[in-house]
Length: 171
Image (cartoon, rainbow, N blue to C red; front, side, top):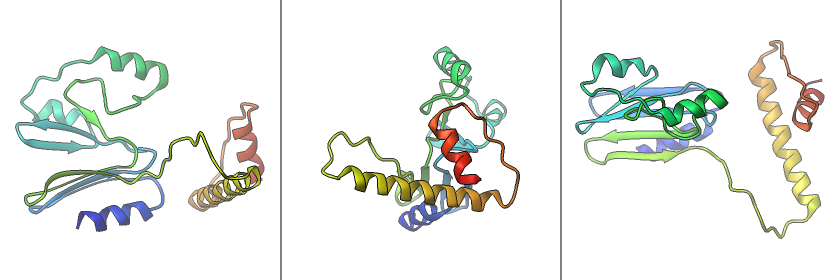
């Protein structure tokens, strides 16, 4: 059952976060960019999951302990790199993360992201690498254009390669 859900989420296009709770299971997942974050807290053998961390202030017995290391990271970059939040007890989902729990299998985690480590050694030719990069770039931009659905796009031009490529493809 969990494998079917993970397979479905891998094929899902777009930005999403999802929480499904029934008497039989709990499923929670975020997309590959964590565009809408989900938060969780483990409390006395129960996992609380929400899209609003203020829920924990209102409904959980535990006192929320402030985590100053995360504050510096969030102030400098606008987000936390890993699962830490401003509170020690509250964690956030990583991009592409799925939580699944049922009475039989207990609590399971999976990742639906498709990120790969940087290749340090490769037997691929430069031409093949360029071709693969071009294919991936065109696929991503085609998906992005489809998701825009004729809406206006604003591209901050930094003068770097990324913004130039995006502007030239969208033109």
